Length: 431
Ligand code: AMP
Image 1 (cartoon, protein in one colour):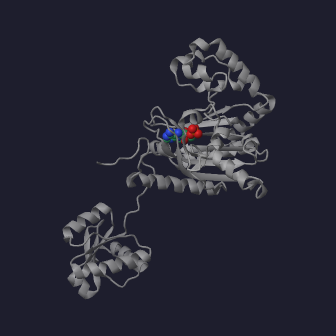
Image 2 (image 1 turned 180 degrees about the horizontal axis):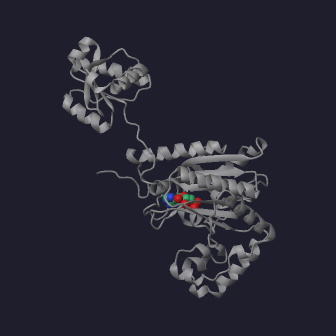
């Protein structure tokens, strides 16, 4: 019986993985310009880390985590997101004693047991950043600028950043009470999920997807009308700094994000070409989280983008180039094959991208393979070439042969130079 992959877990085949690699390279370059350093965190954490940080009443913790008992009885979970682990690492390694501000980025798989559909998987990858140690509006704006630049560098179609403020511990309790009162007064019109978690997490009323529930809460109070003066000033300053850079996020007062730890600045990015799951990323400020996980009272802000959705939202013409072989070595006959193995090994060690097919193939079938591989030059090594210790070159782009044009003893760089020179020869001088 054929064994298939697990539902929601997928393979990324080479024609798609080149987009992943390109995307990661673009992201790494940009992160370096913003002076962020990479952190690599484990895939497995203690379950309580996520319960304590993401929040007990969130969808993720309530029903989406891959949790299992280790053989010693401890409860472990495959990480559903990166922020909790990074804050755990920040506290565990006392990073605040090494640097006043930590600017970190990460890449890697996350796991959530959601219902799979286009753009929604059970194992998916995220690219994310965190800044721990600053709570001024300027850093929020800088993180949003980084996000904006990243979407541009990745050639994402129709990206739109949506912005909201979730208030803080001063103003949110009163807002929460107002929203709860609204929910209770309109309980009959709420969906089952929202009714159930109304008392524990009324904010989730605002991002419920159920159409009837949404209609009921259309007139619900929003946080932006309840911000305290410092939160309002912070929010205004973030927007003013972005406006100076020509960036005006769309305000979305109903966006609350699915995780409990956010305060003040919260944002999401949507893009075109994704269908129902059109969010490519999101993030926000989490000032209480480091302390809640046993660290100093240090503020933080970050975002995460979903790589699978980014790939779907990338422009078709994005500058992704597969690295084709530079030369395709086509030996004819057993003696030539043995020599070809030796040549390929040497040139590869010299840094040349070399492809060589299985032995016993005719010249015609090797040409076909070379064409498919996208190699610019085919180096033919038959009996005559072997005797002369010089290879015949076919320039696939110019469709011309150059008989015994390069020496088998050429080092990689000299080989590539010789090939380039051949292809620049005027036609009448070609051998
Ligand atoms: P979140 O922190 O839940 O908003 O996730 C940030 C981003 O990760 C989302 O905007 C998606 O792009 C991506 N993401 C989250 N969950 C999934 C999933 N189940 N499958 C694919 N991508 C996801």
